[in-house]
Image 1: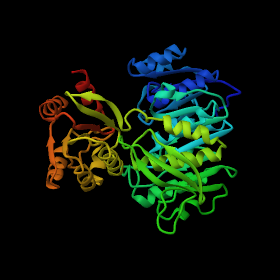
Image 2 (image 1 turned 30 degrees about the horizontal axis):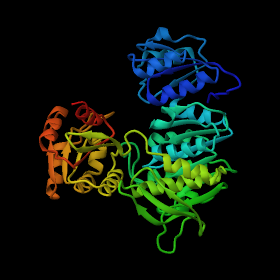
Image 3 (image 1 turned 90 degrees about the horizontal axis):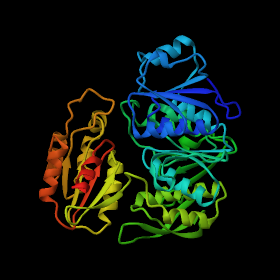
Length: 463
């Protein structure tokens, strides 16, 4: 495999450079002195920013864009073997890396690399960890899967002491990483278009845990079933976090939990049986207590001061699309947008919403992929029925073409059978019209899903 070495900058070409993650990685390399270029299908806000960095962007992926002085090419998963640039790169024998492999290679160039994994909560916890490091004034380099207001985007290019990134299990991409500190937030069934079952997923996380450096630290949720399976044989330090259950008390836990009028929790942090500090979060929901506990365990692993931890967690108000309060619409309706697209995530978002004062809770949900909708159909119906009113948009197909017999109309019917008012409309315009006619002052409206459902809220904000 090609090794990226910051002390020896070379010419790097990104096929699909306009992607949110690829653009961030390209920016890091550019600022580290590499000669960076790449291609994308069409101009965008992202490619404009890349060009301002001095990165050459080709529009349209053509064989003539590839020159024999390119030292290494980087591909996204969306690039197929019939892509003309891919064909030319292979013909010229130019070494190549996947996006995940590049992240792994970048990690080797920093003193401490931090990888945050889990089925849910990666973006929020990565953001919390990042805020702690910045409050500690450590100048971290950060890549996060959402827009973090404090860094003005999804990337921060800092010094070489700390590199922070999310670690996604899909297609086993995180197995290309080299973390010094790794967090495992939770392990549940998801991405069943790739993994065979939960056991297959657990096996992948076990391999990920084994990648932590011997003098590093693994931080893991004690609620994960049979954590010993994940941690057995590890030479690194293992730290647990979670809410105490029965005789099982994690290393990092929360006591005396209280929620304010906006559903944001405060609690006493307890570390290995001893009271440590009081924490008041700026984000709502019990799930964020767990994310914060993981971040506190991380803070101790890097020696962060309590004042930095308290300041970071109290001031952090979330990233875009994670229970993001976007404003007031339709003469008094609170608009929230959330990325939740798995039943566990939806339940957490619902519980957070129910802790905030409102009249009726409206949820506009856009299921993400046919395979996920089929795998969790009954669970989706169950958690969506926690709302007062549910509106279904068409399934966001993403990479899939086979419907597997699934539709949002079927899901709307299943929610109705649970006793909750549920509607399906085939277009965003029809959904907006229904909301305008039926939402009342004091209601809360959540646009929810990993696709483009947020556009409904944006349109209502502008009207």
